[in-house]
Length: 429
Image 1 (cartoon, helix red, strand yellow):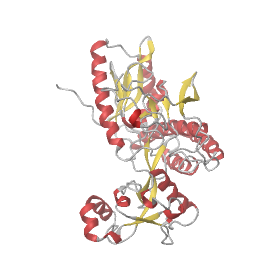
Image 2 (cartoon, helix red, strand yellow):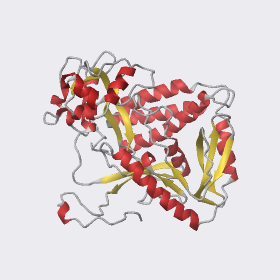
Image 3 (cartoon, one colour):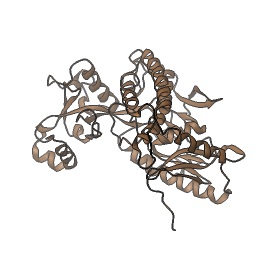
Image 4 (tube, helix red, strand yellow):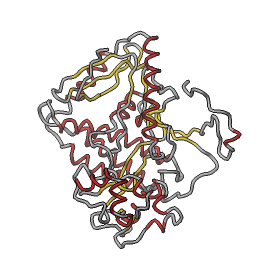
């Protein structure tokens, strides 16, 4: 089939159906090349934009990812879950401030093969945090350990720690980790010959839009999959499960949406909503504050207040800071001209990032315990009595946060898996 693909377009907003605002009937798009708008009507709309926690100082994600899907879903009225759960990876390459490549990953295989993590003193610091598993501990613990070493003054002058695999032998490293050897060489580092400077880096958002097993959201006509969807990974995603998530739910969403599209009529979208989306984007042009300092301050704020180690006071201060940045972002402008106007795109990006960051802060405030990737210095214990998820929904324009008990459908904590009921042939509702 000849299916048109709109290259170099970004989605600005979801469009409600005319006369049925609870249903999503398409999306408003912006052509980055020309600045032209295109409203697309659709029986089914899928959010699969990738999460991208690029609002942290260090991130493993491409910087053009700005949580657009989540921000649009929130604006459109979708429910969210698990937003406090942001995964950090312990070894992002540290190349210098302002370089987009900073934070890109040196993968787990290096530590699994026996690589050492060292602080500025040359100490294998994981002995302080997990003396049994050392560098092979879980991502959350290893990331938090590196962050603690840096924050407590045992990191490098540029704010990092080291990973060293040179003791494994040059031939072994080159044979088994060629891609990472080449990546380091491209950046001026010798992975084979000695330590490489790294830092914990924001990697994956485990929270997102609440979906059912068929990728449906609470808004008819809207589906979500991949990193835009929450609830799949719990509090601590396992390595490789992001690929499995996108593969499985990408297929599920496609099959379910195809069936629904055959069964429902195409509804018109609300023209007023489309006009409002275009007018809002155009209003971000002109003279005003630059988006770039706002985005830089956002990264610092999230890193320091809503990052790897949290506290009630820091989270409240972080949320207040986000509110202030949101006001500045609303007043920011992208200059003149629409075609390939990156400043304009950055205004739209930082507004989306702040909207999503607020959901993280509010969820983290609600979870008064430490669990998985969510760690609070003021409450380091895990609550073993009541397992719950944190949900956020929009009610009368305001964020409503609530806890809901975890629903176990097959295996409960402490149950012998041998006695659990067999898995169904299909889990799709």
